[in-house]
Image 1 (cartoon, helix red, strand yellow):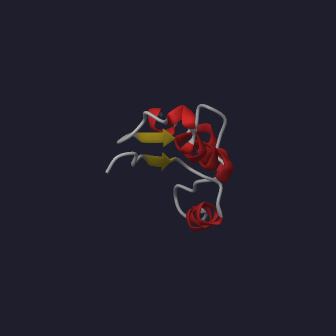
Image 2 (image 1 turned 90 degrees about the horizontal axis):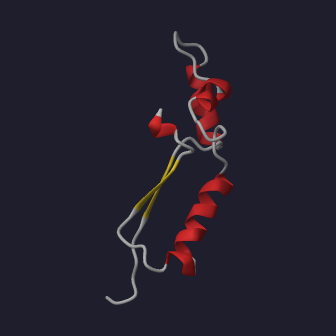
Length: 82
């Protein structure tokens, strides 16, 4: 198949109802996670927004990414770098 590109976007923590629900479930544990504690672990400015992920997908769909294929784009603000 010519002209088909397949890439993957691997998001980090994104401020969604699902994440907020997870944070609520840890609130009453010995190691509660909060938006503040999670934000500190993300070097480039805290928890990502859904728009941050959408912008990355739009980039991969743009002419600027025309030669990118078979790639995983990690969009996490440096979260995995610790």
